[in-house]
Length: 262
Image (cartoon, rainbow, N blue to C red):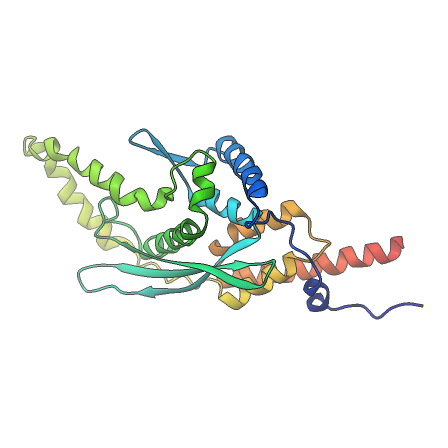
């Protein structure tokens, strides 16, 4: 007797998330060892004054192994006429328990050293990236420390690295005038001619939650899930809709194959 096909929602409700248990020290120590190898093998650190700081991709990997994924709640334009500035809020969602377990706020501004000529989308994107790192730091800093790295996301160190870098150009400012004549003449022309970047419409929280639910389907493989979770906050609305459609099609196709095989 054939059973009625179950909806994706009905299936995913029963799926258990494969992850370490953050409440068990033995499991988290195993995660720290795995994390140290993953970060080293994939070169996910930035060296600042002799210390290794983990890039946000490394923090996302640690979170995904614990079943904790970031959701960008909002990105707010807090610019003024003199400054381009964005603030982002990210929450951490525990897939195993279906609850929010942390949050992080961050900002990015074109007034920061090295970001004077950044386009608007880059300022907005960096605010999100920093907020993701901050949220994970608030929750998982001790695991990153156990893995042998500094418990601060590399993206937060932008301020410090930029502060150090500012000291270097001082001798350049003191050079003869001919060395400075070309740049002022050309830089404004490039800036004026550059077309204004259209605001990027990033995927909504609802899109991301739907992607996460689909990724928990048993026919989706672990590598597929990890790859998507690491990139979920980079999706714009169009790509998010495409990802949802592809996941649904993959689930339907694989379920049909399993039914035929049975």
